[in-house]
Length: 285
Length: 299
Image (tube, rainbow over all chains, first blue to last red):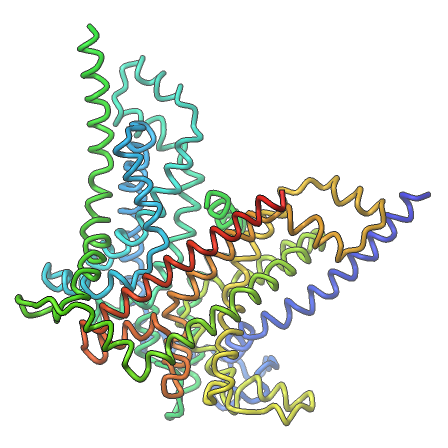
């Protein structure tokens, strides 16, 4: 009797929660709908009834114009190269370093580890100015390698922190067994540990790959040549802060949409990995 | 025999050390070394180009503090932090509890609320700049629901620009923080809630007496992450308002950039960056200390 009452109460509570959540989600998703809807309208309909979908007034014109005007393929390639280089460095060097720290367990490397962890919270702005002069001196301005090294140095402490935490949870017997079979440390890293690191590598890619892909600050201070622009930098220099000057609304909405499109597609296919990645990173933190 | 064993361990330690070298080298050259230089050169008149420089003591710091914008940017940074951190965390926690209790549909809500966090802050800044315009979506909405008196230029006025900016940043960030709260909620045994329901405990009581104490570690993580995040945030306010009107929404992090790359005052930029770093370290340490103690009390 009592449990039946409880069940009814729960069902009613659940319906109430869902009604409230749907309203909140609709409200919070509205800015995204605003962009999506206006990106596909013919120019004269843009911003008139901004939230109403008018199938009769739909067109790919804004998207196509923006694609050409902002030299989208080139910028996409630039962004992709920066992302691949940065993540390549972070994943390979970071996991190897974390393996070394976890396996050695010496006082020196443990101290290094503590220093690295303390560095995670230091603001990038503290390094920014001397860093730019350093890059200029090394000829690494307007260079993919330069940007990638900046991200690698900045995010490496966090990556080593995540990998070390993970490797420490792997039973040590695994490496010892490898040693008995004549595996050197490098061999056991490559053939025993590296395959085990897949889930944490996914987390790393989500927690630092997305911010690298989206970042404006590092490109804005290291890139001056427009052919080297990443997508966010190009969007910024193309549209700027939409001020009071004559605004080409079709280009504003079209370019905002196409810049967001890659991450939207990735998210649609890999949604659960994103959710898991953020949660896993937080528990480690 | 013993000697041979020892050297083998030593060799092993050496190999481990070599493994860490490439990563440590990049961190040192491209992050730690520039930071140490910033710290050192903030006490000199180094301009980044000339090879010679002189020790000037606290002169740069004095000049930065005496600059007419200093009070404004410190005020703005702390104003944003003081609104943002508590509001963000309360909203994220409530939404997480909502998603947790919503059943299967929760996955859809979670995905939709998280998605803005994956967009570039450049995109977010532009979208919200358009929304806040005088002829923008927000004012059209207010007009439609009969609140014409509220219609105004949200980003153009001194007293609305920072609250408007806070709303945008919270909208952007909330999906990320609610995921961390959800992960915390999923570690709480369901039986606790069930027995509380049998006892007839109200939803509010459940939240305050059970949920919050049990997910205290998630609250600590989120409070610290969101504080560091807001203090060092650059892209979003930079694109949304460029610090305007005047310097009324300029933050310390944005002004380091302005000194260094717009006004070309390198030594000012270094001194302000050191002040920013000091704030970040101090606030993180204080917050960790306070919240960790609370966590222990809650247990």
